[in-house]
Length: 520
Image 1 (cartoon, helix red, strand yellow):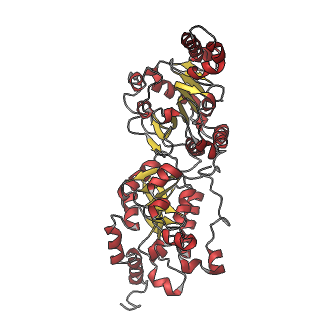
Image 2 (cartoon, rainbow, N blue to C red; image 1 turned 90 degrees about the vertical axis):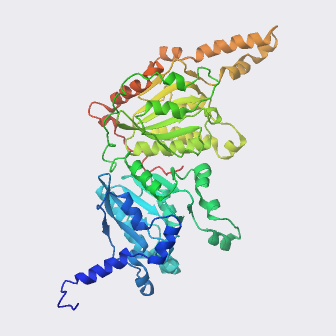
Image 3 (spheres, one colour; image 1 turned 30 degrees about the vertical axis):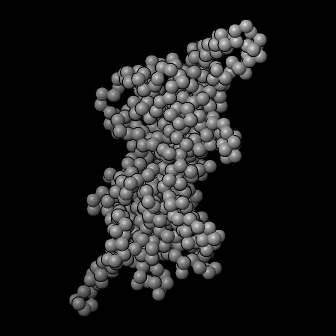
């Protein structure tokens, strides 16, 4: 068709858009599918609501002349779409273009889109599948300086909008940086997130390792704690991204979205007494208790494998979003180690930044003491936890189910820690240490001299145990209410309603933790 026949160049526009949508070509798309993975465009199409994606900068390409025709969209698909009716900025690395390596133009358009979304108050979701920076773009002094991390001209990360990153392929460099400053990180099993890949490692240091060792899901689940949620495949990861977004407001100027209350759940729940054994030495899974507290099917646990002595989970209570921090006696009897402290701090900062109230559920013998814990700076971890608690300004409610000993009682927002309310079951057991230990510390020498040491030890232990019960603390005003376990859910709903104030604005945070690093 001649120019006279197509004066508005519609055919040329169609051709250019078609080349962009073709990505790296059929062979590379087939290789992606052979791995059981979706392409960047397929991922976006499955993430957002049907026909809602508005692509930006589709005609971008490399600014290097020799690469311009080989870099459709310069390897990043970016734009706005709706996720369950809510507008969000979505970007995805296209691994079919230059192995997903970030080029100067592609990186710039992604950064520009995210910055624009923050300014307008839209959540950001990035789908990572990138092999670091593109070498021709970043080599040399001018190349390096043209692709520095965007500090100049960009505001610091202060959680003004929720940011979600999904690791959906081998992610080195850029995608790992994005994940490290996001709010929620999702990783598909069989992928990797690390600074550099095996070949770079071997060239630089001579060390050999595969991608699973450097950044596989097991490493991040159990050792680093850098990933919140784990997916079986792409579809599962996208479903998790949609679900996670549902707990957060569009931006920090709004309160979290409210759902209709769960029908029939403003009643007493006798199942609590079955979930927690009467024997204080018996272990149990705190997840059962949290499921009885929260609205049905609303618990979303973050970092479930990273020091599981502490559960950190988003959920809903009477339709409203809450954050749970709960000791789990099933793991190290609920004794918290350095990992638990790290994820508690990160979770408190996350919830406080987006006006999500906190519910602490106690059943802990204290902090986990060991040489390994001390080598990881246990005093610093404990006090970072306390400082995050001190800086948080969302409503906080503390529920003591069984044990709550020592400094861990303070870290779990216990009595005299400025919580909105401290609730306790009649089985609450609060002190500096367990009676069986305290009796030896306090009365050990005296008992050794007695005619019947075991009987004396038992009598002293029972005396100490009576003092640990919640009655004295309630009498002194440190416990606001001692409650029947069956009323736990109702009491938490009512307490949080009061804490939020008549118009809900009492639940708004001052966001003093918005600049706190993701893992500190």
